[in-house]
Amino acid sequence: MNDSAPLAVTIGNFDGVHLGHRAILARLKAHARAAGATPAVVTFDPHPQAVLRGHAPLALTTAPRRTELLQEAGIDRVLVIPFDRSLSLVEPEAFVSEMLVRGLGVRAVVVGENFRFGHKARGDTGMLATMGRELGFSFEAVPLKELTAARSPPLPSAKRSPGATWRGRTRPSAAVTGCPAASSGARDGGSGSDSPPPTSTRRRTSACRGSASTPDTSPSVRNDSSAR
Image 1: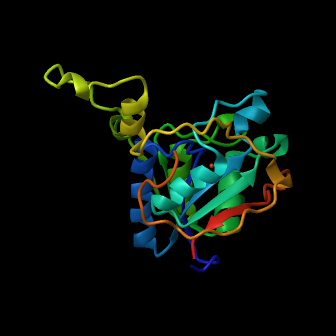
Image 2: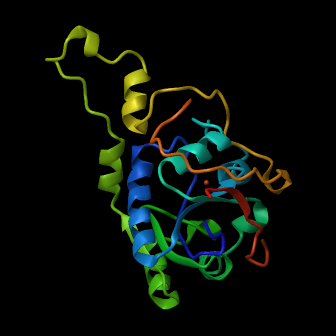
Protein backbone atom coordinates (compact mmCIF):
# COMPACT_ATOMS: atom_id res chain seq x y z
CA MET A 1 0.00 0.00 0.00
CA ASN A 2 1.22 3.50 -0.85
CA ASP A 3 1.31 5.65 2.30
CA SER A 4 1.14 8.78 0.14
CA ALA A 5 -2.15 7.70 -1.47
CA PRO A 6 -5.20 9.91 -0.85
CA LEU A 7 -7.35 8.90 2.10
CA ALA A 8 -11.00 8.31 2.83
CA VAL A 9 -11.40 8.78 6.58
CA THR A 10 -13.73 8.43 9.48
CA ILE A 11 -12.95 10.01 12.84
CA GLY A 12 -13.59 8.72 16.34
CA ASN A 13 -12.52 6.48 19.18
CA PHE A 14 -13.92 3.19 17.79
CA ASP A 15 -13.50 1.36 21.09
CA GLY A 16 -14.58 -2.26 20.66
CA VAL A 17 -15.31 -1.76 16.93
CA HIS A 18 -18.95 -2.76 17.50
CA LEU A 19 -21.57 -3.27 14.81
CA GLY A 20 -22.50 0.42 14.79
CA HIS A 21 -18.87 1.24 14.05
CA ARG A 22 -18.82 -1.41 11.33
CA ALA A 23 -21.80 0.21 9.63
CA ILE A 24 -19.74 3.40 9.33
CA LEU A 25 -16.69 1.45 8.16
CA ALA A 26 -18.73 -0.22 5.42
CA ARG A 27 -19.82 3.17 4.05
CA LEU A 28 -16.24 4.45 4.40
CA LYS A 29 -14.91 1.60 2.25
CA ALA A 30 -17.53 2.34 -0.40
CA HIS A 31 -16.43 5.99 -0.55
CA ALA A 32 -12.78 4.90 -0.68
CA ARG A 33 -13.45 2.67 -3.68
CA ALA A 34 -15.34 5.43 -5.48
CA ALA A 35 -12.58 7.98 -4.82
CA GLY A 36 -9.65 5.64 -5.48
CA ALA A 37 -8.52 6.29 -1.92
CA THR A 38 -7.23 4.27 1.03
CA PRO A 39 -9.76 3.70 3.86
CA ALA A 40 -8.40 5.06 7.14
CA VAL A 41 -9.53 5.74 10.70
CA VAL A 42 -8.37 8.92 12.46
CA THR A 43 -8.40 8.56 16.21
CA PHE A 44 -6.88 10.28 19.25
CA ASP A 45 -4.54 9.29 22.07
CA PRO A 46 -5.18 9.80 24.88
CA HIS A 47 -8.98 9.80 24.78
CA PRO A 48 -10.14 13.46 24.51
CA GLN A 49 -12.22 13.14 27.68
CA ALA A 50 -9.10 12.23 29.63
CA VAL A 51 -7.69 15.65 28.73
CA LEU A 52 -10.87 17.73 28.89
CA ARG A 53 -12.56 16.11 31.91
CA GLY A 54 -9.72 14.40 33.68
CA HIS A 55 -11.04 10.87 33.07
CA ALA A 56 -11.92 8.66 30.12
CA PRO A 57 -14.59 5.99 29.69
CA LEU A 58 -13.51 2.48 30.63
CA ALA A 59 -12.18 0.91 27.44
CA LEU A 60 -13.51 -2.35 26.02
CA THR A 61 -10.27 -3.07 24.17
CA THR A 62 -6.63 -2.05 24.30
CA ALA A 63 -5.34 0.32 21.62
CA PRO A 64 -3.36 -2.44 19.83
CA ARG A 65 -6.43 -4.73 19.81
CA ARG A 66 -8.58 -1.90 18.48
CA THR A 67 -6.11 -1.48 15.62
CA GLU A 68 -6.29 -5.22 14.88
CA LEU A 69 -10.10 -5.14 14.81
CA LEU A 70 -10.12 -2.15 12.47
CA GLN A 71 -7.70 -3.89 10.13
CA GLU A 72 -9.78 -7.05 10.22
CA ALA A 73 -12.78 -4.90 9.24
CA GLY A 74 -10.92 -3.81 6.08
CA ILE A 75 -9.29 -0.57 7.23
CA ASP A 76 -5.82 -0.14 5.75
CA ARG A 77 -4.53 2.68 7.96
CA VAL A 78 -5.11 3.79 11.55
CA LEU A 79 -3.80 7.29 12.20
CA VAL A 80 -3.39 8.39 15.82
CA ILE A 81 -3.34 12.10 16.62
CA PRO A 82 -1.84 12.97 20.03
CA PHE A 83 -4.59 14.86 21.86
CA ASP A 84 -3.76 17.69 24.26
CA ARG A 85 -5.17 21.03 25.39
CA SER A 86 -3.75 22.90 22.42
CA LEU A 87 -5.46 20.56 19.97
CA SER A 88 -8.75 20.99 21.83
CA LEU A 89 -8.58 24.74 21.04
CA VAL A 90 -8.30 24.24 17.26
CA GLU A 91 -11.38 25.57 15.47
CA PRO A 92 -13.29 22.98 13.41
CA GLU A 93 -12.73 24.80 10.11
CA ALA A 94 -8.96 24.70 10.67
CA PHE A 95 -9.06 21.04 11.65
CA VAL A 96 -10.75 20.16 8.35
CA SER A 97 -8.79 22.41 6.01
CA GLU A 98 -5.35 22.13 7.61
CA MET A 99 -5.33 18.70 9.22
CA LEU A 100 -7.59 16.61 7.01
CA VAL A 101 -7.30 18.20 3.57
CA ARG A 102 -3.85 19.79 3.49
CA GLY A 103 -2.17 17.44 5.98
CA LEU A 104 -3.67 14.07 5.04
CA GLY A 105 -4.95 14.64 1.50
CA VAL A 106 -8.45 13.48 2.39
CA ARG A 107 -10.81 12.72 -0.50
CA ALA A 108 -13.80 11.46 1.53
CA VAL A 109 -15.14 11.76 5.08
CA VAL A 110 -17.77 9.47 6.65
CA VAL A 111 -19.12 9.91 10.20
CA GLY A 112 -22.28 9.32 12.20
CA GLU A 113 -24.91 12.04 11.90
CA ASN A 114 -24.41 13.15 15.54
CA PHE A 115 -20.65 13.67 15.07
CA ARG A 116 -19.23 16.87 16.61
CA PHE A 117 -15.65 18.13 16.55
CA GLY A 118 -13.36 21.11 17.04
CA HIS A 119 -13.17 23.74 19.77
CA LYS A 120 -16.26 23.59 21.98
CA ALA A 121 -17.62 20.86 19.66
CA ARG A 122 -18.73 23.61 17.27
CA GLY A 123 -18.14 21.53 14.14
CA ASP A 124 -20.94 19.27 12.93
CA THR A 125 -22.04 17.29 9.88
CA GLY A 126 -23.51 20.37 8.23
CA MET A 127 -20.12 22.07 8.36
CA LEU A 128 -18.42 18.96 6.97
CA ALA A 129 -20.89 18.78 4.08
CA THR A 130 -20.34 22.44 3.22
CA MET A 131 -16.57 22.24 3.47
CA GLY A 132 -16.58 19.05 1.43
CA ARG A 133 -18.23 20.89 -1.45
CA GLU A 134 -15.78 23.78 -1.11
CA LEU A 135 -12.60 21.74 -0.67
CA GLY A 136 -13.37 18.82 -2.95
CA PHE A 137 -14.01 15.80 -0.73
CA SER A 138 -17.11 13.63 -0.63
CA PHE A 139 -19.03 13.42 2.64
CA GLU A 140 -21.64 11.19 4.20
CA ALA A 141 -23.34 11.33 7.59
CA VAL A 142 -24.64 7.84 8.40
CA PRO A 143 -28.14 8.16 9.92
CA LEU A 144 -28.26 7.51 13.65
CA LYS A 145 -31.12 5.03 13.23
CA GLU A 146 -28.86 2.82 11.09
CA LEU A 147 -26.13 2.87 13.72
CA THR A 148 -28.59 2.18 16.54
CA ALA A 149 -30.18 -0.70 14.65
CA ALA A 150 -26.77 -2.20 13.99
CA ARG A 151 -25.79 -2.01 17.66
CA SER A 152 -29.04 -3.42 19.08
CA PRO A 153 -28.96 -7.19 19.63
CA PRO A 154 -32.23 -9.10 19.15
CA LEU A 155 -34.25 -9.66 22.30
CA PRO A 156 -34.42 -13.25 23.59
CA SER A 157 -37.52 -15.03 22.27
CA ALA A 158 -39.91 -16.81 24.61
CA LYS A 159 -39.99 -19.64 22.06
CA ARG A 160 -36.31 -20.36 22.42
CA SER A 161 -35.15 -23.34 24.41
CA PRO A 162 -33.79 -22.64 27.92
CA GLY A 163 -30.30 -23.40 26.68
CA ALA A 164 -30.53 -20.56 24.13
CA THR A 165 -31.20 -17.78 26.63
CA TRP A 166 -28.56 -15.16 27.30
CA ARG A 167 -26.40 -15.63 30.34
CA GLY A 168 -24.81 -12.53 31.77
CA ARG A 169 -23.20 -10.27 29.13
CA THR A 170 -21.69 -12.90 26.86
CA ARG A 171 -24.39 -13.19 24.17
CA PRO A 172 -25.36 -9.48 24.07
CA SER A 173 -21.70 -8.49 23.85
CA ALA A 174 -21.09 -10.82 20.90
CA ALA A 175 -24.29 -9.62 19.21
CA VAL A 176 -23.33 -5.98 19.54
CA THR A 177 -19.67 -6.32 18.58
CA GLY A 178 -20.06 -9.03 15.98
CA CYS A 179 -17.14 -10.85 17.65
CA PRO A 180 -16.78 -13.50 20.36
CA ALA A 181 -17.01 -11.84 23.77
CA ALA A 182 -13.75 -11.16 25.55
CA SER A 183 -12.52 -8.88 28.30
CA SER A 184 -9.30 -7.00 27.84
CA GLY A 185 -9.31 -5.59 31.35
CA ALA A 186 -7.58 -2.44 30.08
CA ARG A 187 -8.33 1.23 29.81
CA ASP A 188 -7.86 2.67 26.33
CA GLY A 189 -5.55 5.45 27.39
CA GLY A 190 -2.06 6.23 26.20
CA SER A 191 0.97 8.41 26.57
CA GLY A 192 0.23 10.58 23.56
CA SER A 193 3.14 11.86 21.51
CA ASP A 194 5.65 10.23 23.88
CA SER A 195 4.59 6.78 22.70
CA PRO A 196 6.88 5.20 20.08
CA PRO A 197 5.18 4.46 16.75
CA PRO A 198 4.04 0.84 16.66
CA THR A 199 5.43 -1.30 13.88
CA SER A 200 3.37 -1.79 10.75
CA THR A 201 1.12 -4.82 10.69
CA ARG A 202 -0.56 -6.66 7.84
CA ARG A 203 -4.35 -6.38 7.65
CA ARG A 204 -5.98 -9.63 8.67
CA THR A 205 -8.66 -11.27 6.56
CA SER A 206 -10.78 -12.66 9.36
CA ALA A 207 -13.62 -10.43 10.56
CA CYS A 208 -12.96 -11.43 14.18
CA ARG A 209 -9.82 -13.21 15.24
CA GLY A 210 -8.19 -13.67 18.61
CA SER A 211 -9.25 -12.01 21.83
CA ALA A 212 -11.63 -9.56 22.11
CA SER A 213 -9.31 6.58 17.32
CA THR A 214 -1.64 22.22 17.95
CA PRO A 215 -1.65 25.67 18.06
CA ASP A 216 -0.65 25.84 14.36
CA THR A 217 -3.50 23.36 13.63
CA SER A 218 -0.99 20.80 12.36
CA PRO A 219 -0.49 18.29 15.19
CA SER A 220 1.80 15.36 14.55
CA VAL A 221 0.13 12.17 13.43
CA ARG A 222 1.34 8.77 14.54
CA ASN A 223 0.81 6.12 11.88
CA ASP A 224 -0.40 3.42 14.26
CA SER A 225 -0.69 0.82 11.54
CA SER A 226 -0.42 0.45 7.81
CA ALA A 227 -1.31 -2.77 6.04
CA ARG A 228 1.14 -3.52 3.32
